Image (cartoon, rainbow, N blue to C red; front, side):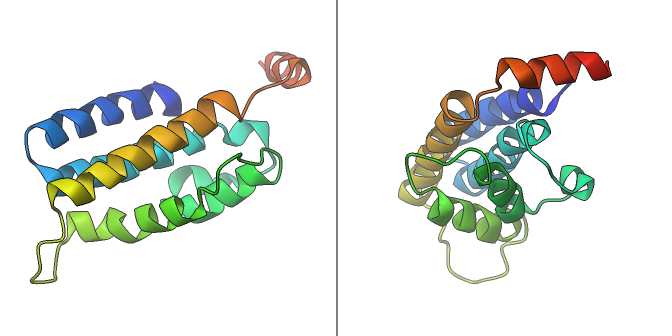
Length: 135
């Protein structure tokens, strides 16, 4: 299974969790799906191979933007995902920030990131030629 297929599965899980009222876990899965969607496009840019096994969504996104500029500023969304990836797994604070509204914002972030990956991080014919020449 590649990063994109894995992202689709995690994305579906995030939707199910959100619709079941499991907002904290929905946020976690949204953050993971965003990371996986972005990682799926790393082969289209030069990158440090260690990013594939990291959760450094900020630098993964930065690598992609060296070639694929987004029509929408996704940086605040990426930063929120970096922050809440761990906080949703290990909620140490006493306040329950993981409300339905909060999780809905993250569901929206996921849609924006998927749109960026699907419609703006587009492989060229040269990319495909290079990929299949290496195979």
